[in-house]
Length: 443
Image (cartoon, rainbow, N blue to C red; front, side, top):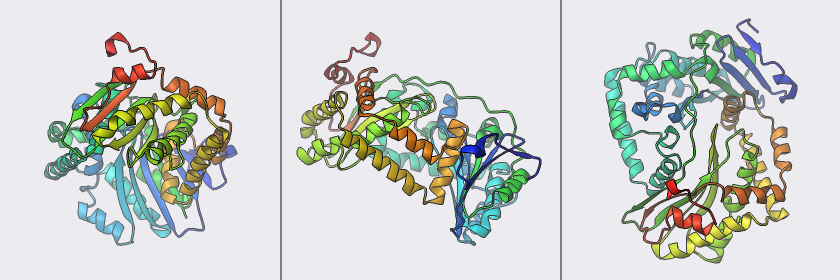
């Protein structure tokens, strides 16, 4: 291996033999997971920069950058990018999240060099032509408009904005028509220069790949990114809140939520299991009680989303206005009960569901590449399956029940709803039902 890279100290000791990790001189991590029985590969560049890294005047710029990366470089036109990858039967795409942005490709094993060349080209040499930007801004405005036509999208945006009031973590990823329309090509280049640094980037590849060959390609194509870590985003604080919007719809979309646990928190995995137990499948408490026994809605589920410094735990449902007076009390009662008693069979079932989902995802090179990349950005290293299984196995019914008792009482709730909302309770009413004492400022 060339001197420009070095294997991460100690990484190989606990990793599967198929996983290799190297770090370039500029701090960029290269990680591969070899699946030599495959004829294909998936690879991409994950950047520790997303919507929460934006200043208020930059709202939506991370998503605009993701779009513009495919609109032409000094070496390729936008059409060249599409044609060259599709000429070999591959595909290339990108996505923006709250804390990361990713650019990835799926190809046959012999076309890995082409995929790396295209990804490095769009990240190093994009032109950000103003005319192309004008066209893409129009496309993104249509994307924003389409999301506003989806009540479920709207209620989730409102939920996150209320949970993290007036903070970057609460702002919708796509931005607003006003902010998106305001960006210049120079603004986009500045955002890339400020946030796309070697220590904040991971090149992850999975499938039939050769680690040393990928490291050598990366050394030649990604060495220009700075070696100084980009600034950390501002710390976000869960506030709780409410966003109840009356609109003429057939059903009311509703999300009831609480502060969750950060990725590094002790109770992160317990929170994942608790969300599965409460509303992660047809056997879950919420599905059985709300839909099967009472027929109050078609869909109800719980979710837990972790971030680097906080998290969100929520329950989503959609129902007719007439059923709302019964629906919310039933959900709240299930939240109360889970803090009192959990059966061993429930824990075993939820744990098995998570374990099966993890193992099934490992059969997909794309899922595996993304999983390892995010682990490195979040934890600084890949997390082995054995370690994940040990953490899940260590959970007890007492610990989960204790978490439930604290999770749904220690912070003020967040309530978001849209549609016929005459019977949607306020934040204060929900807190009262759960036995919370609302702070004066929150009332």
